[in-house]
Image (cartoon, one colour):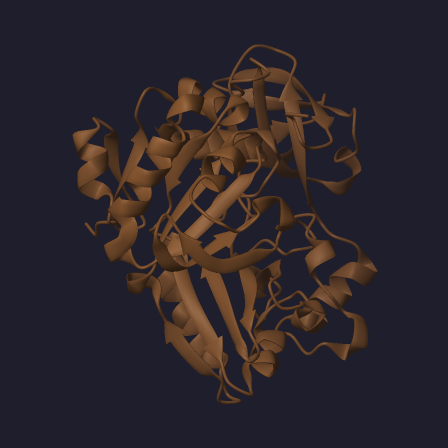
Length: 361
């Protein structure tokens, strides 16, 4: 298995380790519920160095990004980031990711760890215009520092005023004595905070500085288990569960990152335009269980007559709400808020209700 700059540290700290996307990653330390609540109430640190990073450079960078992404990169200003996705020829999602407008003619794409090789091959395949591509995944490390006390913790380590970095904006600055650290006001927890990008050799120095600065707030390392429950409580999609090559952005409620204006020539556009005109065959929705139980990926969803109308894509016992919550695709007529559905759990039909995200207000 591959290692991040922090793998030995995770093991030393007693983390429960498991393979994820080819990496030996920490799943939990003190327990998923405790770690989840730490992020919601204070500050936690995630090692997300397994994520992929691609640079797109040169005079053809924008043309390339407009071709391969669903969102409109021309709307980005320097120092801003944009959520977007790759779409295949059939309208399915190859991956969802973030694009950073780093410098003139220079962009950074941060892709999901499990899709690095697939995404890189996709980019190379469609780079017919000759943009400069660089797979920097093995040369960048990343920590996500999340929670209401994340800003106060990190502010001790940089002269940059973090309050001047709005959501989905970033800067490159000195941090914890390390030059050229990308400080990005992004994250996938819904609890606020920043993501830091840096060279792997500086990882331990930055980790130690963050934990010293956050000591007064009870900062803790957080594993991938709590990362999943946190994103689910916000109704955020996870690639491989809620999104894949067969689900379209419109079915997944991502029409807001799918731009048809100004004849943007992205891959799969014609299929998605047709789907938008004719209507989707299924919709991704969020639901809360009324009956006791935990919905799991792959469970069937039925209506009150027992007819199968969809399936669960993500589910858990919410650490904050103390009830089963989930996401899943259902027939469009059933996707409206307050509609009752039933999740089939081991020959039982558990009643649930459709709700608007986020679960954690």
